[in-house]
Length: 287
Image (cartoon, rainbow, N blue to C red; front, side, top):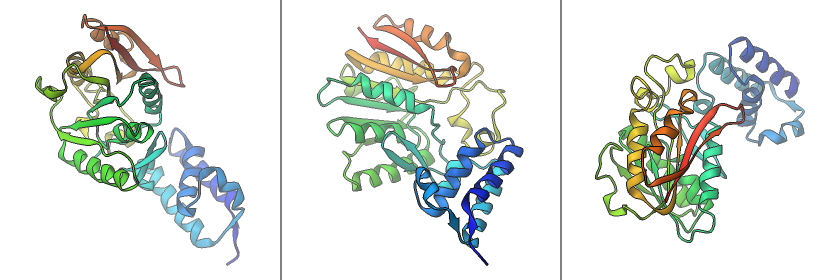
């Protein structure tokens, strides 16, 4: 059979994904095509024609995506900063909007020599590893309570260390434990967290409902159970001038800043919106 135009396959994929209710059909169609071809998305235009087996491979992945299997499960990776990590069943899939909190955290470390960083509810460890990659002088600690998540985190940490990044320190621990990382009290420059924060009973997309671990998504009736513990840990761990950043639900624009403000040692409390103007993460500094 003759070679076929890649753009036609991508257009068909976009049509299928749009009909399936995928929120970013063109983006996903192009990323799946790039994954099959083993090229960067921006270089797809350099591949005008492809063989029929490539079309078939793209079609199979598109069919799975149309059934609302997460894009990152299909490609096997998720990106943050300058790195990618492996993800799959059993670990929360990092979302692109978390890049904004990562960028804020990285900026908060500007001018700090050999910073100490703590990533709570680390999941795949993508935030911890992206920060370690961007700041090789940092000592980064990453914590999760879930055994499956820690297995993914260890795999990713080993891969990044093998690539030459400064190794991160992984811990099995509960953010609700008041003694967690007690040896670091008053010494941490940045506490960053993407904890479970969706209120129980909230309707979520099939990618989340059917594939993300429940305990990594939902957190009590108001979605704040884990965040309350993160706030407490941050107040205890941060040094004077240290910063905390916590991702939260759209409905938490007032409640998470309010929780941070209840801690007298935390000042300069702010809430930040994502590119879609939705409330996304809150920050504060220790006075």
